[in-house]
Structure formats: C-alpha cells, structure tokens
Amino acid sequence: MFDFRGNSKAELDLKKGDVIFLLQRVNADWLEGTVNNQTGIFPQSFVKIIKPLPESEVEAGAPTYSCLRCFLLTPSGVETRDVCVQEDLTIQPTYKELLSRMRNVFKEDDISINYRDAEGDLIRILEDEDVQLMIRESRTQRDRIKRPANQFLWEIHVSATSDLSVYNSEA
Image 1 (tube, rainbow, N blue to C red):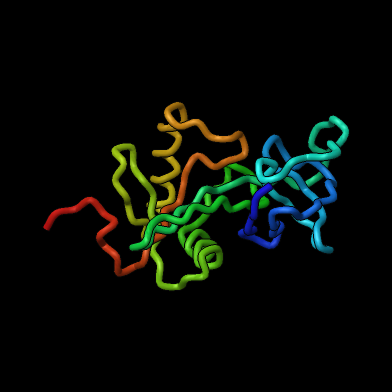
Image 2 (image 1 turned 30 degrees about the horizontal axis):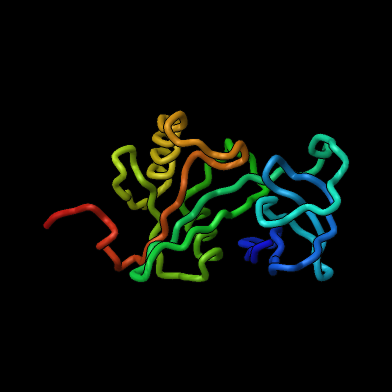
C-alpha cells in the first residue's frame, strides 16, 4: 500500500504496488517475505495482506527483531526511521555502537546522538555512561509512552555535530 525504505540489510525496500510472498510473521507488527528476489522483514502496516499466513506463533528458533525509533533533526525538518535490529530489547549498547549504527542508518558522518529527558530537553550522548542514563530514564517513562511490544523504550535523536540550535539553552 505504501513505499517503505529498509534501514538495514534485514529489511526489505518496498514500492507501492509490489506483491510480496509472505514467509512468516516475525512478531505482532513485522512480517518476513520475498519481493524482487530479495528476502527480508517489513512492517505489516505498510501492506494489504491478500492471502494470510496460517495462524501460528512466531516460529521457534527464528530470529526476533526489535525496533529502535530514530529521528534525524535537520534545518528543513525531522526525518523519522524505525531501525530493526536482531537484538533483544534488554541490550545495552555502547556509545560507539550507537554512533556507528546511526552513521550507517542516516549515511552521515558528522553527527551527534541525543535523547530526550523526562522534561523534553535534548541531551547529547558523549560516552557509555550517558547511554546508561538514557536507558535508566526511559524505564521511568515506560508507563507514560505507549510503544509496540518489540520497540525499545528509548529513542535516538540525531543532529549535526555543529548544530547547537536543537538544544534548549540560553547564553
């Protein structure tokens, strides 16, 4: 029904009108399928299912995918991406791992990674301790923000390293 641009090797690129051969349900929100000789996962909300899969649980032993919501903050607006990773929701990545993944997702090198605190302020992540703080703070907000079961509680906000206008600060 809609175009979808995959954010990782695991995700399919879809164009409106593509016919996808369904292989399995990954979880409540994601499916695995084949289109144009490519196999990968995609969000169910982007497609109209013509022939449903047999009702079954996620296949035993099949990899599970978790989604990380990311925002690229630019002078022209905000670009939102849901990045699927083959990792458990309980992982605690390092600063370098997050920075590397965001550089790959947004195809930008000169970036900073940030998160929003409980007051809504953007906080720049500079080291592993900042990642730990982000994860701890996100757990305290879990009841306020409704997310799909397979989505990380925390979100990453990516900005240009030199763009300090994204922060609520006064000189």
